[in-house]
Length: 291
Image (cartoon, rainbow, N blue to C red; front, side):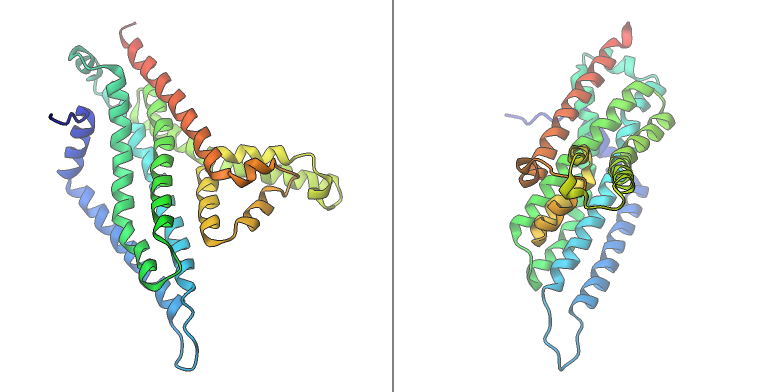
């Protein structure tokens, strides 16, 4: 039985493989991670002869590297996803695709998968640097697998936003701007809402203890849509700082205990539901091409 690969995924992967610019950027990416890893482990493990080497520093280097890797992936995915469908609209090739008996769902899913596969490539390319923590100590293999799966799912979430905006804008430049605006709205906007509410509440209460007075803990639930907070919840849990993370969640008041205990899982489920809705809307937008 021959394995069927989505034609759009296959075409995009071949385009990346044949691009010299892609390999140049990949080399720069690897060189950057090499420098960060070398400097990080040098600082963490370097000690004098009369001191005991603290191998726990490797865990902090892993935390920093994972954060950098996740941020790079989440910033790159929108640019590729935004130009996926918009390029077909702009080049007027969408009609040819639909005339070739290609289902709209195949077009949308293929465009999304091409962005996700690029993110997976970047993650896999960065795995050797994160894996150094296994040799030194402080990190388990399951931590690396959990982080890898989380980045893949976050790439799907961010990619679905870019694909949906790409289907709606029909212009590559506009889709790219809106995709990054939406991503920054999730990364920064949701956190900014919590910060503004915190400042207003502290001002109204005269700087009192907000946690005991409560009343605005539900505002923090908006952070369930923030991929960076989701990634932070996983990494802080792996580092043994879950209590510190939960304290931050309760800075505006009590948050449901079940949500706090399973923040990462609930956040992923919500984001995946949003992704499905956005992909359905993108599919309908392609279906209405002839209307």
